[in-house]
Length: 275
Image (cartoon, rainbow, N blue to C red):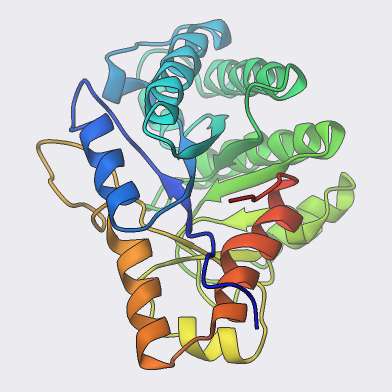
């Protein structure tokens, strides 16, 4: 049995001092027992950015890194994840052609990959709309997602994807075709049946079962930090609080906690989890 000191990692969370509580919400995570966060860049519109070229997303990425610096001052370990939210395609195609929107999103992903290259971020994000779209928009979104997989493979980093509910099994072939390890393709807001790596919302009922089966998964809050939607999707305290409740009830063990919040996170994201 390991020491009672163990990490508690949220692998998909937002903090936003402009539209939300920012560092104060991060402190909630810390005081609840959280130790490490993967800070995911928000969509461009949430920061008032109207991109017309891929380079315009740099404003979003730089703001994410600025917020990461503020949060590190609390004592939390912060790993930035940068990329292009798949819903950008709907907003961009209102102002330009669909093919131009695809180009802008690909260029934005290239800029995000530059932060990976420079060691300022640890993973990319991409995906496809989780809402109903036309066949043309879906095909264009899959083109962007395929390019994100190719970039992640080239930079040897993880890729978090936003996509529709369900297993998203077709993404396995997309990843394999560009040499991207499937176990480093993270299905944000995932489910146990996905062949990709599932990131489960903390309250997911399958967490104790998958832990007992030693299935690889990580945990997230998907906390959006927006004053207009306080607590959405779950609050910043959710991952540490639920993890501790499961430990106290015997639903998971301390070794499970180390595996979920430490060892698996290290394998998927290529980072070091230390206390």
